[in-house]
Image 1: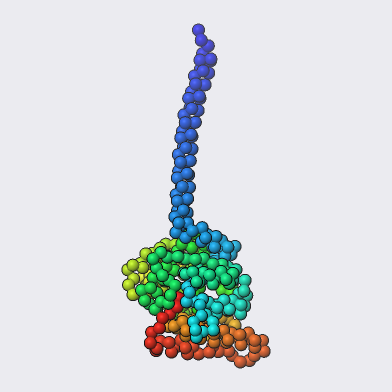
Image 2: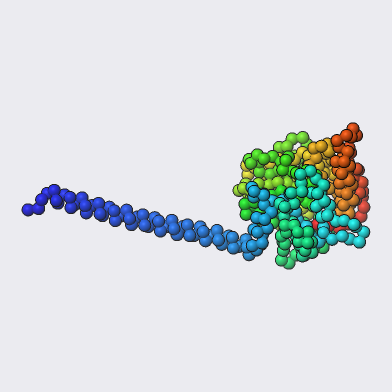
Length: 353
């Protein structure tokens, strides 16, 4: 007759072995599923990366990495041939003035290393490389962005939307950026004045500052703004760019202003600071304090020729201030922007973008 203790022990052993087999099966199955999901997710990321490479090439990632500051922030300016080539009557170009401002500004020279110049045609790209800057060639199949574009023409508007699309791609790659038009003179380092609060998603310049940095009634200007890369800002840019086909007769800045006034900031939970023209000045509303001013933008100006004339005068004003700042008792004033004021009364000319 079998020993009861041995029988019970055998039963327990068999039960444990069976339970162990069930556990190993379930664990193996779970691990296999997780492995499949992990590989699927990795494949999707690879596919997305491949699509980006097909659209922009490896060069965009390399260019962004090269220009990036330690916190994955870059300065971006977009140019075409008309910005980098002199015409017969000019002794300088808008691009030359833009770069000169980094040389003349306080604490701005090192920022050139973090400037990514996005060239929309071969001439602009060649010029950028000749100057040994960080350059990226942005090609758009079927569209010629090389020549002059009449302000608010179909070609002009297409170019502005192409710019928005490119900046969206930069955000999707995890890079924050300061975008600057080349008719913005950098007289001091903007990073010393822009808020370092990481909860602020966008800081954008204004044509006219109303006194409240959070008022959505401030008239924005997309010629200078800082955007942090996150889900909210990507959603904003996607919504913004998605409206390009339903914005007949409007440039991208007008569409963004419409979105702001219709409540998109609150809807997306964004924090947007509107920049004071005391620091981020422009021809629409001059800063009255040379000791505070950071940038000067040739906004409220119709033609490129007028912008060059008046920006040269502004840089002369800045150099004069710097030379006599220490001992001067004279309150400095900006030279009147007469060329820009008069440009609105002349026959429409082409504006070089």
